[in-house]
Amino acid sequence: MLVFWKARLVMLAVPKTGTTAYAHALGSMASMVVSDPPELKHAPVYRYNRFFRPMFDKVGGEMELLAVIREPVDWLGSWYRYRQRGFLEGKPTSTRGMSFDAFCDAYAQGERPPYANVGGQAKFVEPRPNGVSVAHLFKYENQSGLIGFLEERLQTTIDLPRENVSPDRDLTLSGETQAKLRRKCAADFEVWESAR
Image (cartoon, rainbow, N blue to C red; front, side):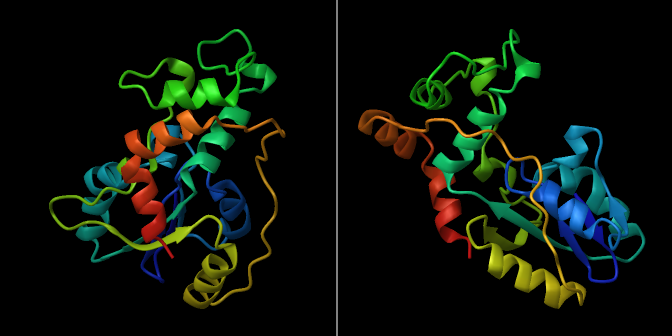
């Protein structure tokens, strides 16, 4: 999570949406960089609302939230590839030895096994009953729009490095699994389609 106090902007770190690269590119400009623990670095709207917003409100700072959402199948592909890495081998969160189709099928189940328990983007950006919501929602695939917005808002030029890139893997899905994901994860597709 990046907090830009003067610009009254908080960039939430939705996992697997390139926010590590933005943290490296903009961290020196940020008033606050939350990089640990992961539960705060990747604080969703509900956690931001509970822990960070009250603190900012006390010092007179009404902040706007920005988040990046990735096309849901591509987002799952990034998780699947990330969890193929050697340091997870033998752990319940590893996807080694399984196909992307099997991973996505498990993700679309009601009770997900540990390797497919990666949360959901729609839940991450879900507005709160008190009105706290993401004001600026960008598609991961619209990097030029996101960079343009940030450059204008922060009055800077951004040179974005490639960071935390997962290894290439076969991301083939059966028609049945694609349909199941669209049905079971409809909210994630709707949120992504609503972003700019």
